[in-house]
Length: 151
Image 1 (cartoon, rainbow, N blue to C red):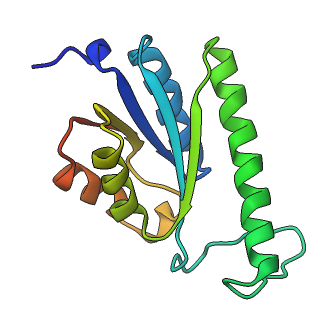
Image 2 (tube, rainbow, N blue to C red):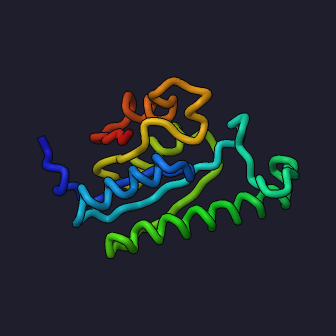
């Protein structure tokens, strides 16, 4: 069995939930020598996904305004990610995409030769799902590498 800190590349999927940022903290502690990539996937079909909670205005999905608000929200999330990494005197690589989170996470793991995945047990819709979120469950079942689930 591979020792945790022997992993060279760790992927931490984040959705902005406190638990996903806690998973990042865990990865930074558990894998002090690994290159950590934080990956945010915007799920077009998440029923409660909101890009502009302050005004309540929701631009049409796929419109130029929607992409701008998604970019702004992602920039804000990655600023939080950078603050967390700085707390551990680390830097991380950030990547984002739009699509089905579990599928894109699994593709990223394979395409980028990731050694380990660390993710929260559930994300932003925890109240609407079982304790073990569908993205986490799919990644655990299908990932070709070890997965640490943080709760």
